[in-house]
Amino acid sequence: MATIFSRIIAGEIPCYKVAENDRFFAFLDINPLAKGHTLVVPKCETDYIFDLDDQTLADMMVFAKQIAAKIKEFSQCNRVAVVVLGLEVPHAHIHLIPMNSENDVDFRKEKLKLTPEEFANIALELNK
Ligand code: AMP
Picture 1 (spheres, protein in one colour):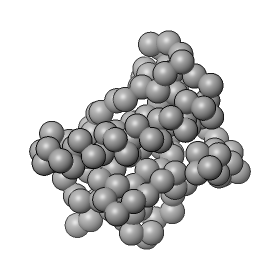
Picture 2 (cartoon, helix red, strand yellow):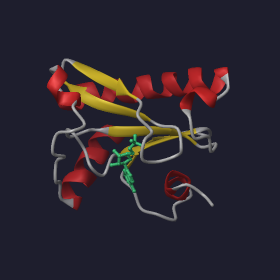
Picture 3 (cartoon, protein in one colour):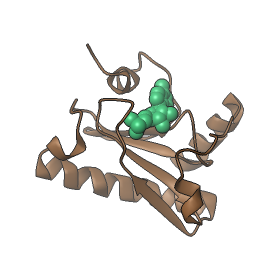
Picture 4 (cartoon, rainbow, N blue to C red):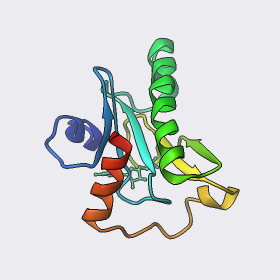
């Protein structure tokens, strides 16, 4: 059965898309730690990120780098954190999270509750 991220990529489940090319897809995390929290995923279905072949892993990071630059400009944060958990969804993905301090990437924190309009506006800004 397709993962929820494959279904998002296929357009079967809605998302707030940030970027896409032929091999990778990026969209806003629905439970964000900060405005701009984005997930970067390969279109191929692999659970564990380090099971990706070397070239895909390298290219995924380059794709994420381009999005991180946009998140940094949008958020005016010091850095964009790169976090890999993969505990919930068995489809390799990188979290890109605007960060000013270590506390900003504490996944135990309560997530932001954003309205659909807020998500859409963030996605719009990151698509520029
Ligand atoms: P993890 O696999 O531990 O990295 O966590 C999966 C992440 O995917 C969580 O931060 C979820 O909020 C996020 N997530 C799960 N389903 C969706 C969805 N339909 N749209 C956007 N983000 C999602």
